[in-house]
Image (cartoon, rainbow, N blue to C red):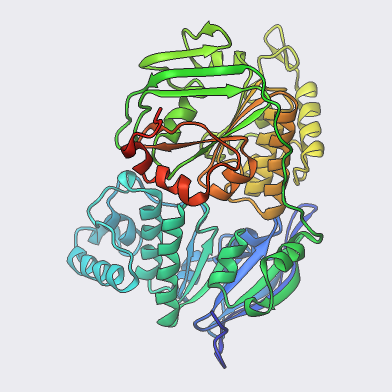
Length: 514
């Protein structure tokens, strides 16, 4: 997309500075946004992007500088003022009430509670018009808790449009979307921009930035380090600008697989609502090997991860560690077998938001001899371990007593990675380990998984990013509707051939299906 010609600024940020104690998150940041423009905001995790957008939307107050919307100063620290000025924000982590309907979520907060039963007919009509105009079809009477991730994001965008937003902030909008859902989102954005919407697009996926944005502003360590039109740059230059150095892609050496540390033989588990369970899955996780699991979200990956992590047990079939069958399977048993867990959702199941980095670093090892003695916690040892993880894995934070909720997603993920790998696991369950991370953090996490493999661990990489699976995995399986494909060696399958299995057609043909 080319930059709008002669368009006037609808948004201006002037010398925004924000400090958290000794940490300067934003340092004299200035830029404009034009009408009908998509401006990409790039930067490493912790570069200050989300802090800046929270200032714009009124969640934070800047220590210095100001914001203008349509030529008028925006009162600081007032989200209602931002909404009234036409600014809408779709957060990386959705802010929806699962127990309410789509319509209820969209109109929530737009009218007095004393008029809650009034005006729903007009609201329903307005919502239907918006959904039709922007290609955001969703059932207004569906409970949000029953929707897919992509459908929930549509609801978040509809919430902003319903409030007559003319400036839309999208914070990592494709981090939890399938490629097909991301394509649908881009189609919506193009329609919105054609109707005069202005968009700030925060993303780590450089191919998306070059596809959708007119201009790019790059942040590093809280400062603007570059401004460029997308037509005048490429992914390689943007990545170098973000990190400040050239980034070489990860190139793992050939693996030297050892014995199977964990084996599943014809294992099945029950479905959970709309989420399928496992259907007679056979799988070997071998020492010194990365086993990649590809598939469209919602096809049984959750059940497999829950099984290996000890959250559920096989309903039928056999699970073995080495030559010993598994009995009384539980999270405690999984930890006893030295299974390190990098969970899919670092916020919901990977960390406890109000706990410090120290407390989160020992969440799954606090009963070990290193951190407790005769029932008493050894907090000095725990803090030393947290500092070691912070230093070794470059977790950017004020210190080990910082609440983990104050960290960026990438730094949170680095702490989880360090917590797992510093405990010398035999099996690493890496479920979407680089989701929402910048290119530097992605490379770092992938290098650590390869290092764990080379140290003799069995690594199960579950990812919806087919490029990542192809790049890292020594062997690949595809999961569809709870079924597992046969094992494919590295380099023997093209993305198109794996796509046939992801769509379920490989199973339909019956070719070597497990």
